[in-house]
Image 1 (cartoon, helix red, strand yellow):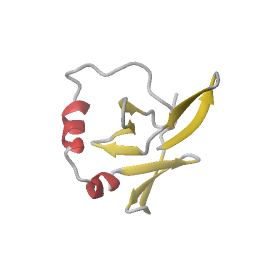
Image 2 (cartoon, rainbow, N blue to C red):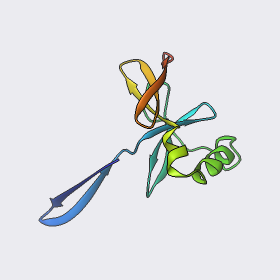
Image 3 (spheres, rainbow, N blue to C red):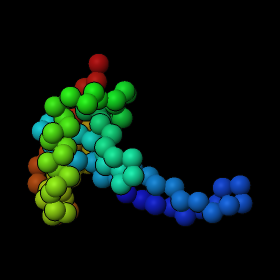
Length: 102
């Protein structure tokens, strides 16, 4: 995540840009420290709409929240071109071609 200090209308403000991307249980999401998770499409774009409270993502996310930082880092991923790269401790440990969005 990147936080930028700037001014808006002459007043100081902070802009927070997307957090790291993670993958748990096959769900890819961007984590924001204030707004929480935002699910991603296979091509890295944000999914539209919210998940219902009973969606199977939420129990997995609740477990993920209890992870320590080292365990969370193991779920971090990035999208370069059309290939997801799964990272562990900052190192790429595997790759998977992103599915095409129809």
